[in-house]
Length: 423
Image 1 (tube, rainbow, N blue to C red):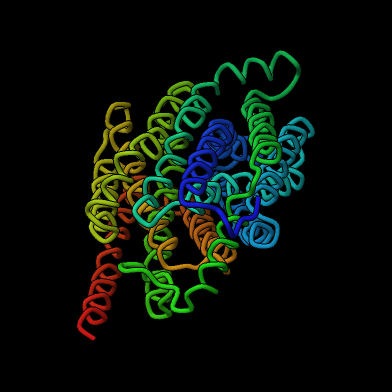
Image 2 (image 1 turned 90 degrees about the vertical axis):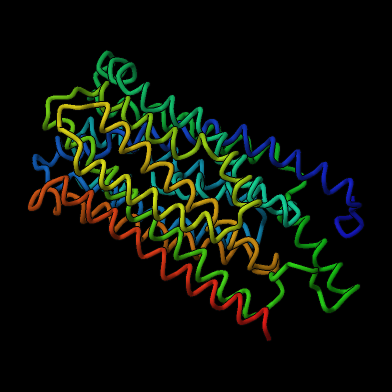
């Protein structure tokens, strides 16, 4: 099949087939991500012997994710999504196995190194959302992102709730209980990688790039009504706004989520309770995606970016005021936290896709995800220190207030859009 002669009908079929493959891979990828996130802070706390170090796993995971986002983005730009995403998931699986070995050997240096590698899986899991948008029409882009994210829900919710059983499995074979979920993560990431490598043919990104090149040759203007992806000004502003929305929501989400298991343990909750709360949180991160995608396409990227800030502020207030013994209040706070992140990620991602061209899209997306990962690393690293010196309530309130910075970003975006419309 020649990519430059793909008919609209063929493109639509390839778009739907790509979404189906992304859905299957994300079922596994979500489980790999969530299983480790749930117990990473607890494992580091036990191995290092201090609560102030509990944010280190999140920081290392997101630092590894930052480097991986750049590499996976560039590999995808050169060789396509199949190679980029498949390789990234397999690397994440190797990192998860290394964490298990580090826990058995009680090796802190090995733990830190493997957390960085494990972060490759996290970056790949996040970048997989772009694969579904490659062949999507402008009015389908938010929907494509949402389908990718919602498919992560099942694995992501199952992962934390398998923490207890996987701990039992690990203990039965002489592995520390908190390392058990990383056994699940290793298998899940490996399966996600296999799905991409085996089935993502033809590669949607390479098809989209070739189709766009053919269109550019036929019509050098390259634009379509309402599509700013070929406008240099639209590119710059859209990229900055989309990246800012995702960065701010990531900082707030990671900081509060990272310290919730430690906060719960201090109030006498067990590992299964922690898994339940984090399971609700991750469900809220992904499950509403279909509705969010429809709202982003219907109400606009700007409106949903504002909604993200408002919901994250609510999450911070509820978390700060929640009684330490009330698991219901903590679930409510973490659900709001996940929902605000969902709004921000889908609206921000769609802004990025709108503002980029296939000739540089994957590389730009990878670069932006580096910033998102570094923002998460900062939130995770500082969260432990803030909680140790000021408490969980202070961390939650600070996170909620930080989300308000989305307002000036959106106002700047709207001012630029209106100025462009007048000119």
